[in-house]
Every structure is written in structure tokens, then in C-alpha cells.
Length: 274
Image 1 (spheres, rainbow, N blue to C red):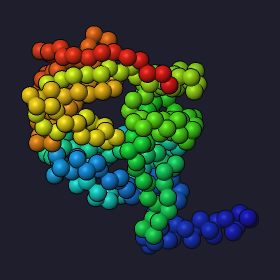
Image 2 (tube, rainbow, N blue to C red):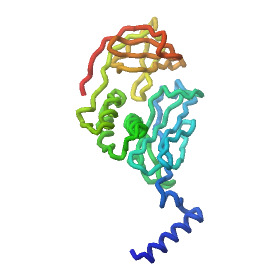
Image 3 (cartoon, helix red, strand yellow):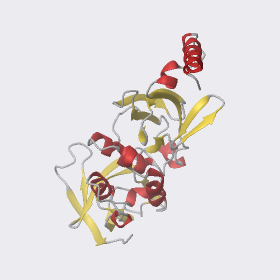
Image 4 (cartoon, one colour):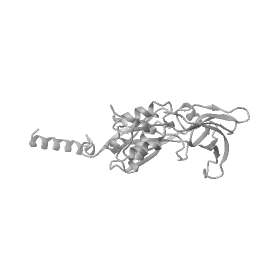
């Protein structure tokens, strides 16, 4: 293309942008506009949280971390975002009116998860890509460049597990950050078969991949394969219990000031191999 023709094309695009027919920032600048599409929540979440909403976390037009919301779950939200590769979008579910991030998020990456539709570019978030998006977000916050990661390949590895939140994401992040990451660094967290006393009724953990667990008469609940770390056990009727598991066992914590006043319950440790 000649310089003359290129100049005419640039002038035409600028005129269209000025007329509002195209977004000039999207054509010439480092930003894009996408509409975020959410996955369906687990049915038992809707039973327990009739006012389920979400908070959207994403890379803004200049690469800055932005938070928008809360929005009603299922609402289509359009935002301006950075065009940098592997930009992490996270939809954090919120149980009712409180803003605590106790449930695992849905996620997706720009532009990997972007598809063109009648209403423009649409970024589809999935539950399976939630942990991948968390890894990419933490890399960006740590000052690393997520664009250097083969995110499609890593996401394929993570999504192969029935519950991707069982992976040791901290180890993956550390190895990606120091540049020594290999597939051998993808390993599952240690687990324990827990027995807790939350009370009678139906309960579930924070992951969207788990189902309902029914407590026995007297309120004893078996939680097989509980990964090491901090968890929230939700009752369908609104009750909540905080759990912490490590090599010493499983501990019940109060929902407020979780590090204090913990009570040990039963648990038998085991190690899962990838």
C-alpha cells in the first residue's frame, strides 16, 4: 500500500471513529471492548444464594487492575480492557449482599477466550478456567509478563482434573515466575479425609465442581479428599463453617477472625500424585 493510500485509509477510519461508527481507541490504541459472558452457577448455589451476584476483575485499558460490580449473576457486562495477551478476567461470585470472596471464581483470558458475535466481541468465562485466570492474574500483579506463558497448553493441563482447584497453584505460579516451569511442576495438593461436626442438613464447599454433602443424624459430616488449606463449608440454609486442613489435621475456625480460636476435628492425611 502506498503512503498516499495509507493516509487516506487512516483519515477514513478516523472519520468513522469521530462519527461514532467505530471505536477509534479499539482500532488504533492498546485497548478493546468486550462483553463478558458468565457460566451457569451450580444449582445448589442458587438454592443457597437466591441473590447471587458477581464482581468482575480484569485488566483495564492501560493494563491496570480494575474491579467492577457487583452485578446480578447472568448480567452481560461490557468493559474496556487491555489488548495484552493472557489478560485475566475473573468473575467472583458473591453470596447475597456481602462482598467477601468465599466462592471460587469463573475465569477466562483475553484474547484466548474471545469470540466474535452479533453484538461484538464476547469473552466467555468458564468454571474450569477460573484457576488458570487466577494464576495469570497473580503473575501480572507480581510484575511478570503473562503473555510469555503458553496459556492454552497450561489451561489444558489444569482442566483435565475433575476439580482444577485441587492443583497446587502456588507452586505453578512460583515456577512460572522464576522461569523454570515444566509440566513436572503441575502437582496436586495433599488431601485428607475429614470428619467434621457442622450440624445436620446439606452442605457444600466453595468449589463449583463439588456436590451436596448430607450430614448424618447428629450433625456429623464426612468430607473426603479435602485439600490442604483454608475452606468454607456452606449450609444450604445459610449456615457457614470455616475449615483449615494441613498435616496436623482438620481444624474448625470461626467465620470472623479465622486464625484465632480454632478447634481440631478428625482427619487422616494422604498425598495425591499427579
